[in-house]
Image 1: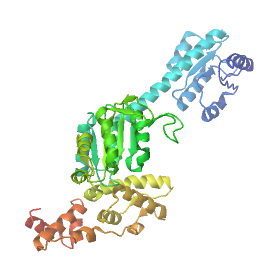
Image 2 (image 1 turned 90 degrees about the horizontal axis):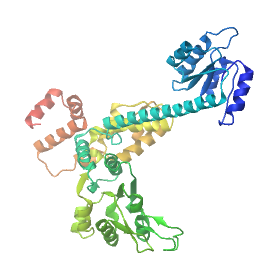
Image 3 (image 1 turned 45 degrees about the vertical axis):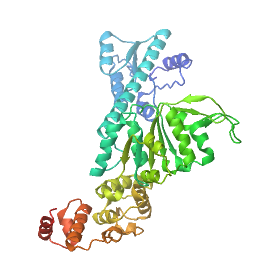
Image 4 (image 1 turned 90 degrees about the vertical axis):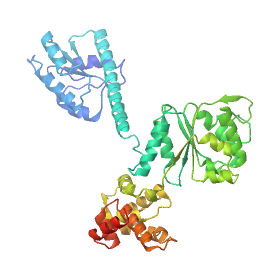
Length: 450
């Protein structure tokens, strides 16, 4: 409360401190900017006149505008002993929430403040909803913002996610380590009808055989030595939502059998009990192992495979989507430059070229770690090829020279195709890489029908 009359301030504080967590009183309106900079207030009570013999309310309107400029959502109640309808209307038009006359009735003042507090909460709720709406619109405009890339191979993955997400079909995601299988699983969940419920991820490769049933199906207190309390399993926790079982190819045959039984019956039984618990989950599984070959070798149950892969999504390795590397590099450079407080703003073309020539056996995860290490060690504002000296496995040695075809025309065609792919269709760069002029490269493209 800001008022030049100390008696009024003290009387208001005695009344309001019984109803408020904290009451701040101030005689000098020039301290208003300081007060607003140092705290936030549910309600501000502001006198209309601070100078003697002035009843115009001019000072009050001035400080009202200052308050609202600083905090447009502030709830301000104007107070004056010389109020009239015209001044009250003007105060409301200029942003005041309400208007109180001196001397006030205590009950009326408390009621006015109570209403103002409710209004303040409404403002905050509206602001929260606006921000949520804005975030939702951003998510709609960038539906796969966590999966970075625009290559044709990745667009096919996006298309599959769109088709399968709003169904309850079980999905099997296949891909090498580090290709982003969990990101795809989360994208499916976020675009599904279950998005308001839990997404529970389980690394099957990290669960021992002895703890498999306890972790997935839950247990009753005393069911085994370390079972000191009743505990729900991952299936129960994910009920109504999505359960993501990563590295499912690591399960032994006996554990595959137990998992299949639960999926068929759609119910779990905690260890130490005989009471089945119904479950309603959307199942997404992932593996980097060749499950079809494992079925042929009798190391993975065919009936379980049928159960988990109503729809199959194959993620391309990074070496098959090198056109996405510049986008991924920008993404990780921004993250780690902030994290390690480095002034690295860019990655030069030679560095991108080197990164695109590397095989990336660890895929995006390896690229992420390589950039993190390079940023930590670099003293420059731009990453150079030398910052990635530790990348020694080269595409040219691992792929380009591995061929049983010695037909010169076929070898030339293959090399030209790779050069063009590496440089994303840029003829000038591809020609330079091949040691040719643009005209010579065009002649060879025509010769090979490329």
